[in-house]
Amino acid sequence: MIIVKSPDDIEKMSKACKLSAQVLQYAGEQLNAGMSTYELDKLIYDYIIAHGAKPSFLNYGGFKGSACISLNDEVIHGIPSKKKIIRSGDIVSIDVGAFIDGYHGDNAYTYAVGQVSPSAEKLLRVTKECLSLGIAAARPGNRIGDIGNAVQTHAEQNGFSVVREFIGHGIGKDLHEDPEVPNYGAKGRGPRLMPGMTIAIEPMINEGTCSVKVLPDGWTVKTKDGLLSAHFENTIAITQDGPVILTTV
Image (cartoon, one colour):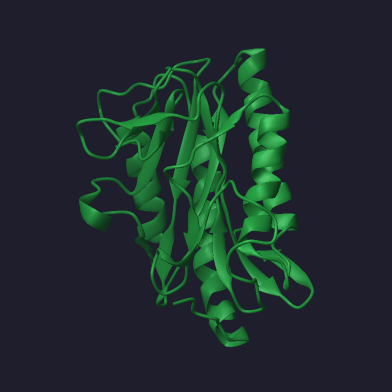
């Protein structure tokens, strides 16, 4: 069931979303070659707790980190680890959410560490553009398929592929709510978008094949061909005037 929020609900939710955006920005500022993903996750945890909130992801379904930190060919759900060291030339996806006053925020950004390859730069740019185009399609009267079609079309026109097994989602009092928000699909298909809906749009775009695999840890998702993947995400509210990004600093 899709939960349509009142203006008061969205106002309360905005607090969680703003904090989620602030911690994501903070994580990007702290990100350095030589640090472990565990160290970065600890900084994220401390930041969220210091601001009176709880990490949305910690212990969610048994996940052992405050953020998903995924490197290079890891698509999503990278588990923070003392053994996983960030190096110059890596691309690092940080996916993080905060829970406060009964609501969740959720956002992600893929950062370049030092000098990355031209192909990595293009992947980051195009994936970020996919997110912007997906958000632009999230207008009242449109359908969920219009979002996915905008993302898929732009990714494939630039020679990249779209992950099928993992998608965006509704969000609010629960981290994952209806509707499902795929990053692919046909225009005019799926649930109709209406004011008061709050959704997380999150393109996961691969440099090579769209095929992925889940590692034995049960969480980490990697590209099957070992090529790079990028992930960007915002939580938005759909209003009469169009989409509003809630995960902004």
